[in-house]
Length: 160
Length: 300
Ligand SMILES: Cc1cc2nc3c(=O)[nH]c(=O)nc-3n(C[C@H](O)[C@H](O)[C@H](O)COP(=O)(O)OP(=O)(O)OC[C@H]3O[C@@H](n4cnc5c(N)ncnc54)[C@H](O)[C@@H]3O)c2cc1C
Ligand code: FES
Ligand code: FES
Image 1 (cartoon, rainbow over the protein chains, first blue to last red):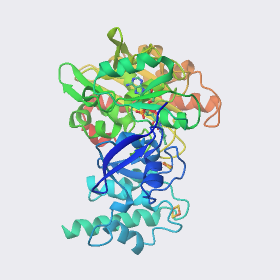
Image 2: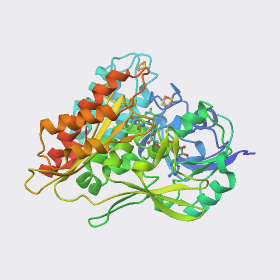
Image 3: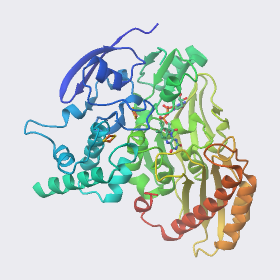
Image 4: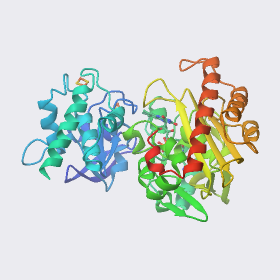
């Protein structure tokens, strides 16, 4: 039964083709097949957000997506966040605000932050906290993360 | 996870054929936020998952002021919550769609999946029940419509027969002077399963002095989301106000048969039902009276 299927998708702006079994999660495919180890496995059941990526621009938990589901779709992972000009303003703000300690939640936080700012460039603190509610952090106590998202949002809206 | 096959058909007929061929060994995949977790936990084994997200009909949202809202069964809560007509006309539905999990869960979770998973705590089920929603079911012998209120038969069990799937949810057009609200209690702000939930829908006279019709449904306090007709009946013919809300709340609390578990005790859940029904009624009446801009209120 089953066997491997070929999947073609745009991952971080580039065409990626890989083989996976239907039951393998997108998170497994990213990490173990494609070598994109930025997305982390925390809970493997949708609760922690460490595996957050964008699927066609929408925030999802890659542990609750099958690799085969991304056929023909676009995925953005933390590896695709920084551009040629350097770190994304969110990444810079996380450094400036000390918004990480162990860093395990950080890729997910950044992808969730990006999904938020893409839709709502100037969120309130309450909106940031609600939006990030599916991303758990055991270290920072969240305040610095929320501050970093706000400061990135300020910088990004000033530049425009 | 134990290996299984995966198909992503482009039509409803192909999906039905694939499901019917495998019987109990195949299931639909919508957002996967329940079924992938359950498969990984080893709660059951499957030979085939049939992905519904490549079927155009199941991804559509249609609104018609006369016939109401049709939501394709594979539409995620996030897409639903961005739809302008849903935001304007169905705040009571958004109350539920915007509290299922967090942002990333809502990016995948569907109302069809919430309904077909048939958890007693399914937030959108009670919300859809009070709105008079119907599920459009397609199967080997054609299509039928099932009221959401009679769709779930036991925890995890539904009226669906072999090869059947939900293609859409239909919600009647909102009438003037009607309003709906869904609320739940969880110990933290987000990302938790309801300890108790309550949905309310009311229709008022044009001058808002009398309730002409009402529906109340509860979540997480019975083996299935629970309709409470006796609480609804207690409201009809009365002026909207705290006395009659309290009466309906007491009846709902009596009708509930909550279990005692790690999330809450039986007495706590009964108490919560009364509080939530009262607040849901206040919210529903406020919406019915004000025709308030729903998107703004829908945040929770
Ligand atoms: C972290 C987390 C938080 C959550 N929080 C909440 C919450 O607050 N409130 C809540 O109610 N739920 C919550 N859930 C549960 C889940 O997200 C919801 O029940 C969701 O709506 C399920 O939809 P889905 O599309 O992901 O379903 P799936 O997992 O794809 O499917 C669920 C079940 O329904 C069947 N199915 C799906 N679509 C159809 C169809 N069209 N026809 C026939 N059968 C179908 C599937 O075969 C499966 O058995 C949470 C889950 C997680 C992981
Ligand atoms: S690993 Fe995916 S949400 Fe925790
Ligand atoms: S920095 Fe350690 S979990 Fe967030």
